[in-house]
Image (cartoon, rainbow, N blue to C red; front, side):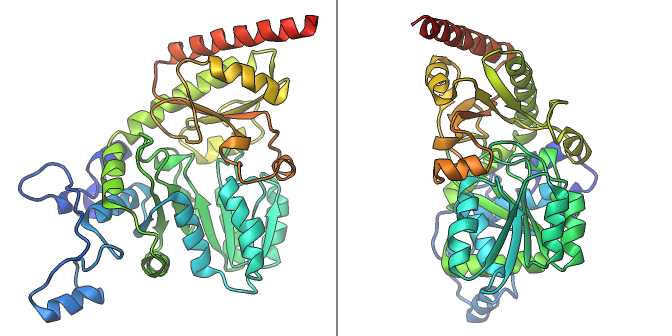
Length: 406
């Protein structure tokens, strides 16, 4: 099947079928895991043509692989991109993209509360290369536009953000970036292509940690960048030389997971909304952050640019980490782990998950208190998740009462 075969079908169908037919062999209905490091040729001229990209094919596993290529084609079609290239992890996708285009003396504009690993690149590694980094308050579109107007090579956005699920107006920011000739890059991990299409909103490149929602089963690491063919080719060249190659077995697992992406994301969003509504009613909860709530500061922007509000939310407890230490261990249907996007509901304080690399002062500057808990809603039955929270909060209330009497 060519990309044109998917022009008139919906995204759920694309998630199942896109990118796979070309890789099938021996009548199999599933993409094979090809683990060969090298690919042999008897014809020396054909070998050379493949090596220089004149002819389709594979020569060495660090460069390309049939299983990995199937994954790249699927996400390329889901994002409506001209091309895609994959990586060993999500952070490899982010760092390789930035290092492909940035040079000493360049300038990048972004937001303050990006994922902790991304933030470390902005605050630690890029300044070492004499690259100027301007970080703005997320949601302060006027401030971002003002920094972009000063000139920049890249405008980097993450929306929704990890873990505070703040929203940036992609279309508005893309116009600002294009006005100064900047590349507009969007991390779409939290939204997924089911809920948001940054390229259609004006972005040049879209990034995913494929480890998360795309794979969906917490059993494979990967990353991917999609977008303009010429841009992606430059990123691919950087990656093929520097070596952050996706493993074919990981590509297979993520491919398999992506077949149910639409179904999973829809149930995760349903659960996230129910959990957010429940948390808003709890006296022991200081604040709830979910773009699907009308009380969310960026709810209207989310409604405009997203088809669904996603499976990620966060909340802050009264009592901070002391309360978190009591509540989280009481939850039955929850992994307490540094991951997200899986079929199981996962809880974790930002200080040990998304921003473990940052100091308390750095987290505070990003509006992330130590007691902030990130929730990745799974695909469990909604009523069971709410009942689980009810019993855990009842226990927390008992402990708070006991403590107050001492």
